[in-house]
Length: 459
Ligand code: PLI
Image (cartoon, rainbow, N blue to C red; front, side, top):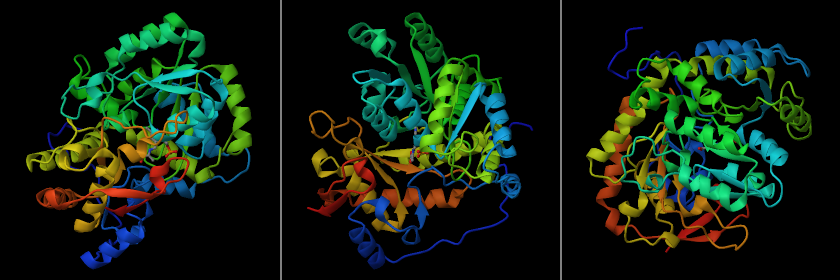
């Protein structure tokens, strides 16, 4: 199709889901009942739900038709073979182990490759990824470039690995202690920031020299490919599909939460190139997820995923998807609100430290900002700051990340431009009354991934 400048959606709407509107008084009660944690709100209490882009996509008519072709056999479902073919063809990995979602794949690969005392360097932590690495006895070391920790820095590839830093980690611990480099494309916690192909190639060269694997968190690889096409010299004429395949070719295996770029409501996989590692993973999946030809999924889920993978690599799709995110980011930035720059692929990240500079980090400014945005207009967002970072497992002390953010995550193919306008207006309204907002104290803290279930009270 002729490449349009406009990011207008390459689809029309066949079915709608009605939204619930609430009053200020209802929201006041709802957020207090939820302990000022947006994860504990009921979705019926939410107007525009930007909590996450995970499992919240609208599937296409083709994917829904695929659901009807679900082959619910316990073993050898034909949908598994469709999925296997889609993964091999689109990403180029040889072997597939389906899992119920991304963390299922993280669990298996961490248990399989990490020994006690190992070190796993990566381009910024992700909550579930790091926890599985730690539970397997490993220790995560952040080797992302320093620009990623600065919300104002406009580096076009803030997801890049600092190769100097990685070399120092290899020198310090020795390659034998490093089972793999944990490489994420579209780095979530940095604001959906991409990795450049140049950086990937250099990373491949360095790790090959030391015999270290690269395990790719490819959850948002299509969004990363879009930014490479837009920003990296030499890639403008390449298809999204060919860029994705090239990215994957520099890595040895991947974990995928298909709930994001692959446009499904549930599903994930582990993809590998080494047969012996695959063989062990395939054996392990039957213990934790399900038989190796369904891994915790129904046949229909695998079919929807196979079709979603194909749709996710279309230029028109990804141009509209990222275009909508950039549209919202520009509107919010134009209102003078501090956000992470440049705007990433899956959401707009408000810089809560700059938004609420009078609230100290241990009084949870991002947590409170997310609660206030809900209170303002029923928009649900997510804290990505000190609460998400959790405690150091060794010292038990809070980790204080440099980025204290609120994520406005845009589900794929779900909301309209008018919804984005409402979001921008609501953020600006909270910004206008920011000086009156006070911090929170944590009154309940679960042991693992505390951000999901912690409770707070206003100070
Ligand atoms: O939620 P899962 O288990 O399907 O996937 C875990 C996961 C792994 N890697 C990355 C980069 C993620 O973003 C991710 C899940 N992300 C969620 C739920 C999110 O809201 O961003």
